[in-house]
Length: 340
Image (cartoon, rainbow, N blue to C red):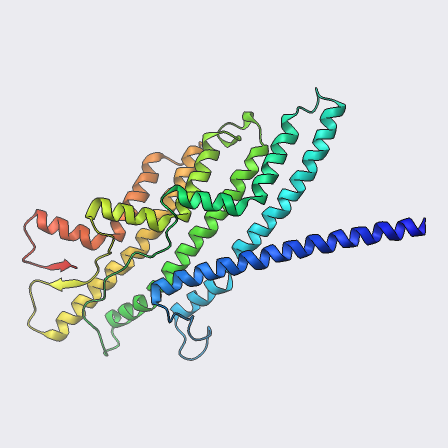
């Protein structure tokens, strides 16, 4: 008995070690890939010389450095989600075998669909990288190339006034905030994908949240939209304004005849547009979450609210081109400010 007991223990220890090694390898491999992808996102914002800057709290570090360090510190979360999906896939595969045994013993009590659904969900979780890649291609390839923001106009050197601090703040946090929003969108898309796969084991009685319910279908569609948020924003910009560039460079059509005052005005105006860009991106992403709630039948969510957030967010991001069009419509291009 001791011999068989030792043999079983050794077998269990070997299996445990193998599973843990496999899960650890998944975490390490996927985390490395995600880390490289996010580093690529930041590089596209700041250029090839991107770094997170000074350590948080150190002399010379900024708010932008803190945001950047936070994103860099959580870039392994998607890898962890993927590893957990593999583990859930293994559990579902085992439960599918047990359900299949129950079906053989009592077909009336345990229909064949029960083990088949669990087996399908488990296989989908094991294929999560393939599914996410397909969802990224759903809305146009999942492009992570950031929309460019034209340069700041003017300057506010010295003085220490409120306008100087506001311009300095948004110059510092714009890039890290964009990286934070894009990283959040990617992570949220991954989580929605896993939840959508897990709905396969539900029944048709769950309505929109069932395996083939409209809520489940929209969950995958919204996940794909979050993966490809930059591509969708570019599509809105090109469709409405015929350009993917976000024009924030202000040009005064009527000068105050004081160069210092003009530079302050231009810099503050550009900062306001950069702030609206950040707000617009948040609204744009929120619109897709509301759209998912509409598909699932949540009473407080409406299609109008969702579309308002999506289109309103896209217009806020492109506030400069929008103001140019409004001024051209009213024949005011020779007065005030235009954006390039």
